[in-house]
Length: 518
Image 1 (cartoon, one colour):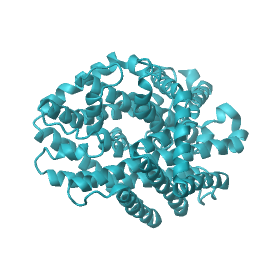
Image 2 (cartoon, one colour; image 1 turned 60 degrees about the vertical axis):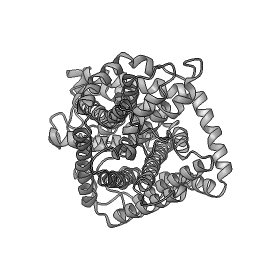
Image 3 (cartoon, one colour; image 1 turned 180 degrees about the vertical axis):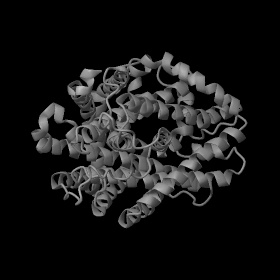
Image 4 (cartoon, helix red, strand yellow; image 1 turned 90 degrees about the vertical axis):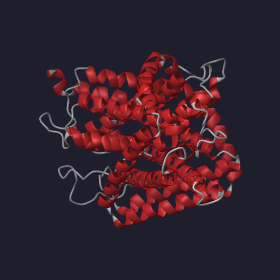
């Protein structure tokens, strides 16, 4: 996932001079990033072995916690939307939304589109059909519902909780744009500004680095597949993936150094138009439009009918057969979304000032969820349609080339492949740009427009970690699994932060005079 570059600062909350860098956040973050990079670069086998052991420990001991917390967050957001707190605003009682509803929805659409949907749009429904989840049969509705489970209510509820906590802290209670400040109702202002708050902010930045690095790694793997499919290169291996990250990373760093914020915003809008155009082209010229339309209600119906079965699947399900599947899919996704939640939550908070809690939750959860279902119905639906017609694009089971295998079945296939690679590349650049701005802001005491050198530092850490994650995985022959495993490890501490934020939000809203008047 990605979003457009950060929105303009709020003059009322931005001081005239930029706050100085917060060394209590920058130094620990730098040390952690350097340890990962140096260890992974010079002691790759040891790093890979340690990461594998840590991954097994996390999945075996706290995999259940990811499952439980994520569904609890979904339930809590539904409760909040329809509770007496629903009318409280992210801002003053009479404050109006900064953006029109149309613009707000458009920006959320941009936040919901990105590398993840490009990578998994074809491959996830197709993979769940070819190799169904444990205990399930090979059926279109199961494949689509499982995909929807991973991409709709759960991720966007997580983003909504973090965005709501940050939005209330910054705009209603005037405490600033930091996760630590969202914890004031739980631990008090003194502790939130002290070492406990710094630990929370460091954990937030580290989780964001790994979550963003996973997205960059997925994008680089898919661009390599596209270059091979179009004949631009032959093979390339992990060196080509690293080269893609380096080249696109340099483009991002150049934009960060020049401060061309408007250019990134324009690029994001162009990318959004290209993504919609590509989806419409596939829907219209595939010959599978009615098949895709049939899938939408089928996906939604099966999703809700199987919701509790999917939400309660743990490592002991199906006599333990579900453990490996969960680590590659559900638990990985929950970790990925959790690690992205500070970045996306901050973005959502900034574009939602003046909205009520009810408007925020309904908009943030339902709009992107609906668009995700449509996206997967188009790309995954066409892949399933080709399966039915005996023209499978599954290949050898590798996920990276399946989008390009599908585009090969359409008119203007070479042009479409180039457009797809361009989309992935720009999503890569804008994701790194936006995430690094958010991380830079957290490293500079919550400022909305951090210093360029801090943004470049965070972006460099992210690109370097992405490279190390891929190189370590390549040693074992599976770079994708390496991305998934290390994302789960990095996000595991933040899962506790997520549930604590729910408690903090509730305490804040319970004390709000507007709730007493409701």
